[in-house]
Image 1: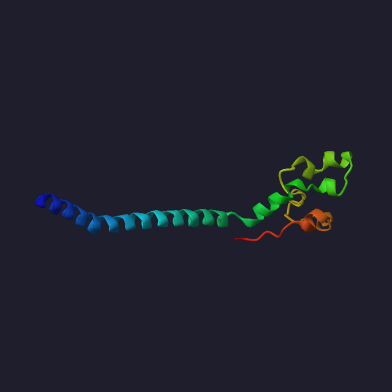
Image 2 (image 1 turned 30 degrees about the horizontal axis):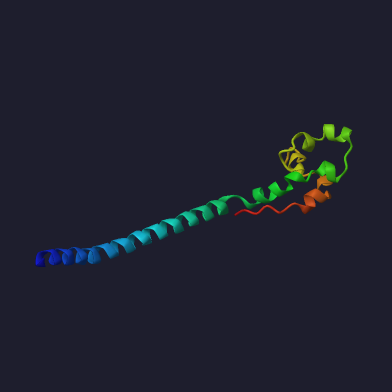
Length: 117
């Protein structure tokens, strides 16, 4: 009986001596990995250009609907044909400058200012 109690005491001592620090270390590793995953996902969100996210809000606002363009104008309008981009980007000329009619358009004036992140 004495040997059995000594063996149980020895095993319990080893578990206390090594088990608790290993368990605490495992919990810390788990917590730090979760924190790292959160930071990585936050970094991915910050890496996306903000103007892309904001311009997507204006995908549903169409200049031809706001300006009440007729069907004849819509059929020849490059913004109506290329509806995947904002209308003021479609109407830029070859040198990259915007047309004066776009500067006074309420759709363009309500659009967010692109910012580099």
